[in-house]
Length: 394
Image (cartoon, rainbow, N blue to C red; front, side, top):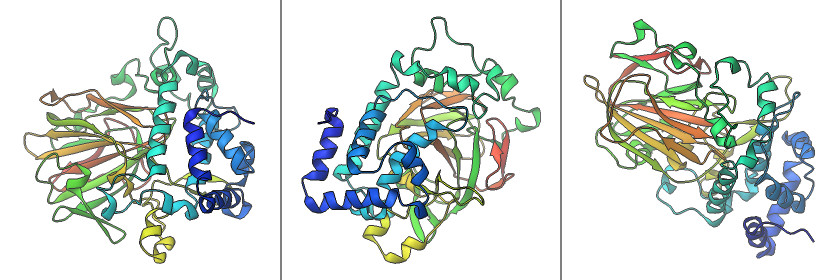
């Protein structure tokens, strides 16, 4: 009989306490390995054919040493497979819905377990043991394209995988220069190396995404007033991106804190032509809220539209500019990126391009909310590195 860690044993006992729940998890595994659904190759690569296999996988992942192979991205696959199972629609009722009505709800048992699980992985990734696979990142073409500009390996080696993951540039002004024409106060620069996801108007304190009205005040945890109008934008990072965030504008930090909530990653069948397999979907989450709303929601497919950010672990940094009102910067933790670490504090004066926060492990998102209207200079899916222009204030 396999001996699991207490955390995974708790999960197994939760599943087995109710025979109907056990049946649903068995069914979820069956769905997850079905070739027509898109995840069979990844599930096979992780040797998952049964529910017991999945418990074993969860147990091994807790202390998995991150590494990437020369032929594929093992790190991303590990994250995708884990959430692919929990994303199966028949498990939606066991997890906290992601919709405006559930923003203030305490998480259900399984959603809370996912948070604890992510924290436990984070603790392992803070250990020296977690560094054993770092050399593979230097050799992998998805990760090493700018390796010459990375900070040097610290004396004595990397202390943890998280230290490596949140590495600095040797010289940020060389790696990510702030152009002279982007220094004026009316210019907004990217807060993260990321791909632009899109932008939406803020109207009367709400952002409307696929007919859902999301309250901006709840996204900001009622931290500051205003933001009745203006603009909301989001961009997404991949595991291979630089994972430190920088100020999009200059001003005074009037709010700086971390909001601990859920951890989640929506995983869908890859929609790109000639590509078979799983892909992270940073879109409006429909699989979980659909269980508590209506069947019509199953048909929603919005890969460029956010919504989960209201229920996700996130940082909150609000910058008061001199001329253009407030700008809220929200680094959003995704999946096992449960750790958002702030580099600034309330009352601090910062300049455009200064570091404000960083992530540890995985892919992530960043949201900006502007009190004033802005004109965007980039379009959906455009790559936007930090300190490069993305918009101007009107």
